[in-house]
Image: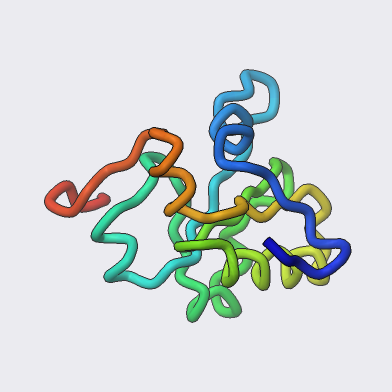
Length: 116
């Protein structure tokens, strides 16, 4: 995957491990849009659609690592760059997005189990 220099990327398996870190667990930020999120999502992820991020950026914690995910990695790459520009310092793009996440057999919830 081509990505601009300076945009850190992590693979989905590493992202899943980081979410479970007992000392400083990462937040998985899902920036897909509502219909995509309702279809399939990672349990426990923070959902802020990319289209709403500007108004809701304060909901993204700065005191924990943030790993950004979309469907395939393009939108999350843009959001990762945006967060870095806005002062977040521990941010990474989940390469391949939820498509790669699912392909690796990592946990997801499917449509029919709506998030709270």
